[in-house]
Structure formats: structure tokens, C-alpha cells
Image 1 (cartoon, one colour):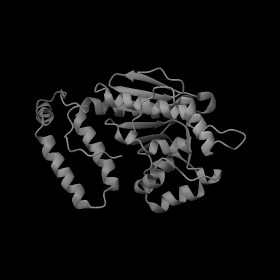
Image 2 (image 1 turned 45 degrees about the vertical axis):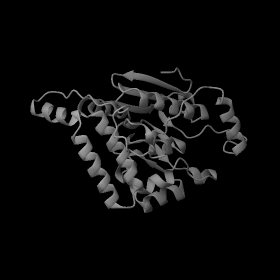
Image 3 (image 1 turned 180 degrees about the vertical axis):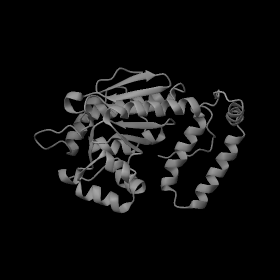
Image 4 (image 1 turned 135 degrees about the vertical axis):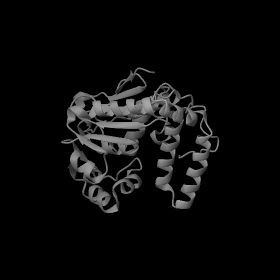
Length: 279
């Protein structure tokens, strides 16, 4: 995997640990950071030895939002275009996190505001520090939220709560986030990354990678699915398909024989041919 400037990627066995690495700026988001994240996700998606991805922040923050300039032009189209042009000559690949066939776990170890919070909404599981300050602060900067967050957030926590957070832009704590269902767990800050790595290791140890990829695909697809009947039919088709694969036999045998499973399915090669793209 490439060497990056604004992130660091490490292999922890079957887990890829991605660290937002601008601690002196509270890991403020830059176009380069975004391009490097998408490139890292692409490489992780292609590597069947990587079974889960954990993303955290260096230092005391997760991501304090976008890097701002004193002129107030950070979000103007021409400024954003110029920054993207600086990266155009570099060979970054791109993979949207929803399309990644591995679970992406956010280990939100500290403050996460603006894009620092809308990014993890596109990932699959969020663990957060109890005392972390979080916020969709866009309206307080004269902006609207981005990265599909206005679509995702109401589906996670309900319309009224999403409206309160996004229309006020107020800050809230990790404990509140977990109580709302925005995060699955709130923990002491020092325990967030170990818990995320343990969760990733459990998935790699216990779960069939093709089944995980299909479940992730369906969870996201069902968010947009207007018909229960259509969702039920799709799940029935893929349940029947997965039941006919070697991993289903191995999973039952391993359970009955009280031993770890030896999965053989490959997310990059063995998904059913009729799995639709989400994007």
C-alpha cells in the first residue's frame, strides 16, 4: 500500500488501521486527506487478506472538520477546484466507502465536527469517546451538510433528532450520540481504538468474508429500499445462494466440531453475479 502524507495505513493482521495523521491541526480535513482515504479504501477492497478497516485520528481529536483559511474562501468552488487540481497529477484510485466490500469501523477517539462527522456516516460502525465533542456545524458556517449526510442521518436516528442536530448545528457528546443510535457504543477515550480493533479481529476470526460483504451491501441497499417485499425477495435469493456455497458447509462443520472456521470464499472473486452496484 502507498505511503501517504495526511494518513497512515498499518496492517494489524487481517485489519487495516487507517489513522488521520495531522495531529497538530486536530486532523483537519484536506482534499489530499480525502483522496488518500479513497485510495486506501480501494487498496483494502482489492486485498482479500484484509477483512476489516478501522479508521481513527492521531492525537486528541478524530477530525476537527475542514481546514479553514482566514480569508473565508475555504468552501468557494474556485478554491475547492484549485485544491483538487493540485492532486490531479497524482495517481490516486478511488473507492466509495459504501462500495467497499469490507466493514469500515470508525474509532472516533475525540472531537469530530463537520466533515469529521459526515465521513463516518458513510462507514458501517461507529465507536466514540464518551466525552468527544461532535457536531454537524454546517449551518453555523453558512453551509449545508454534505456527503449524503442529510439522507443517511434521518435513517439512522429518525427525522426529528436529525433535524435538531442539522438545523441547529449544536455540539453534542459521544454519550448522546450513542443514546441516539448515531454510534453503537460510547467508551472512555483510551478504550475506543482497542475496542474497534477487537471488533475487527472478531469479524476476521468468526465471520465468512463473502457473507459479510453481502450483508453490508444489503444493509445499505435496504436504507434506500421503499418496498419490504423487494428487500425480502432479495434477501431470500442471496440466502439461498449463500447456503449453496462451501463457506456455509464449513461454517456448520466448524461450529459442530468446535473449531475455528477455515473460510474459502473471496469477496473480490466470489460474490454472486447479480449483486447490483449501490452507486
